[in-house]
Length: 193
Image (cartoon, rainbow, N blue to C red):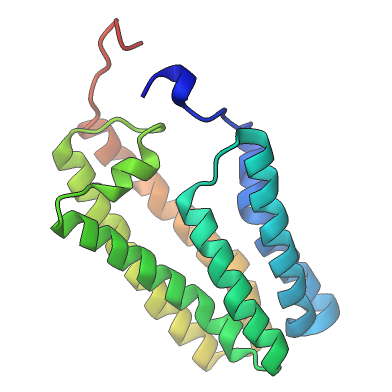
């Protein structure tokens, strides 16, 4: 992919705000309006973040798009049926879906994680294989963890854990992959740089 074909890059701080903003607003709104009001805020914030990212880059990344669709479906069911179970199982479904897609791609010989992260990392095939398997297992572990938390804790505790549990765990896991990224990095030639 030529540099001219790559979507424009968003400022890293803005990218973090777009990725995490809806979840933070969900947490804040839950404290003020309860789970049903917070779900509505979460749905609107998710769509707004996706739209903002598209306006800035003219590109819709696959993972945020799939997440937004699932948020709208399960958030809509939560509000329409007045049943918080739907918003609580949404993370489980997303994590299982992402884990299954990554493993499925690996089995089919299509390094899907490489397609998602290729602009950020350049790894050899063995590196992509190991990183894909690690992320798939991590997503499955998060799915199990979400099920345990929402089934054994209060709604407010579950909402807080989404922000103060899942986010830090994801950052720690991602940071722990740094040695693998270094070990399997493909060095760019002078002509590529």
